[in-house]
Each structure stands twice: as C-alpha cells, then as structure tokens.
Length: 90
Image (cartoon, rainbow, N blue to C red; front, side):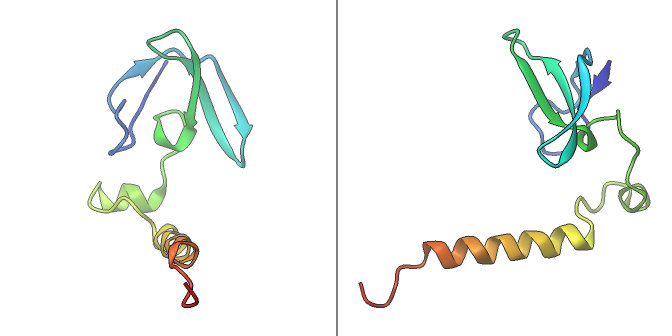
C-alpha cells in the first residue's frame, strides 16, 4: 500500500495497493489500479514509497520546489515561450 503525498495531485491522501515499482521514463514510478480498474502510474517521489527529499523535509511543506527544480522550470518555460511567440515576419 502507498499514499499519494504530492501537495497538488488530485489523488493526494488516497491510498492504493502497490502493483509494482519500476524505473520508467527516466524516473522511479509506482504502478497501481485506479478506480476504473486501469493500471496507472505516478512518480514514486509523489508518494510515501520513496525516501523523502531532505530539502523538502527541512522546508516543512513551505516550499514545494528545490532550487534546481525551479531553475529547470524557468528554462522549460522559456523554451515554451520561444516556441509560442509568433515570428516578426507574420
């Protein structure tokens, strides 16, 4: 059994039977059957299955992103902004 712990996930606080724990798509993931009986997965870090991040433990839920995660998010946002800005020729 595991509990979804991610603060913004719609399944937060819900408990599911762990079907398997695997490394897929570049991260550890937990697999479970959802309410419809379909096999689903979420990152293990969003559950109580994996070890807690020391930074997030120290932040005591006052901060949901580590500095490196925030930097990565900004870089991703910049990439998306460049792709969505219309060119000057249009």
